Amino acid sequence: MKAGVKLPDVTFRTRVRDESVGGPNPFRWEDKTTADYFAGKRVVLFSLPGAFTPTCSTYQLPGFEKGFADFQAEGIDAIYCMSVNDSFVMNKWAESQNLKNVGVIPDGSGEFTRRIGMLVAKDNLGFGNRSWRYAAIVDNGVVEAWFEEPGLCDNHGEDPYGVSSPETVLEHLKTAKAEVAA
Image (cartoon, rainbow, N blue to C red; front, side, top):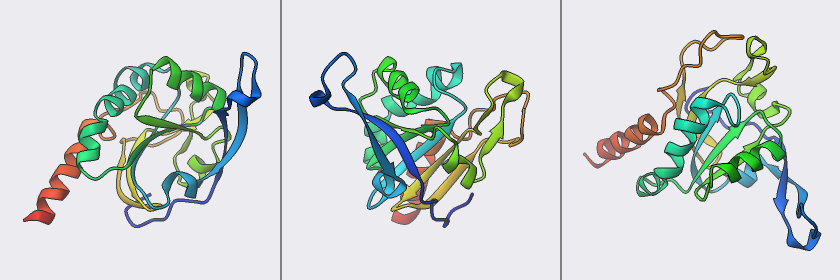
């Protein structure tokens, strides 16, 4: 993936809260498309190996959540976290992280992740197919900037983190803004 590439058109199976459903689990299925998330907006998308995993839950997701106002100040309309997890898992993870600013996108079958070339085997960890860690700035569905962790491969022995961190993406936005102003 690289700057200038349009994101693939994918349909995501999501569960959304709907009080009219009633009962202890008031959610209904709602299909959302790539366009629903990215059309007409400038967003940060980041993806990670799995909900509830240590680096994802301790650093990456909380960093984007806490830094939302800083990203908005740099022209970002929304921040989305994607993972090759189903909507049930992503919704519970969002709830456990008390998310208010970052939206979650469930890529349960890994279709989006596969189509952008970031689907990797993580069988060495018992995960199956998952996303390689990356972040992107996306403007109206087109990649503006790409931040991919080094070493993309199946069953990598480590989980590199830094290139796709909120700090790195925010610094890029600030630098790009300063260059335009100069």
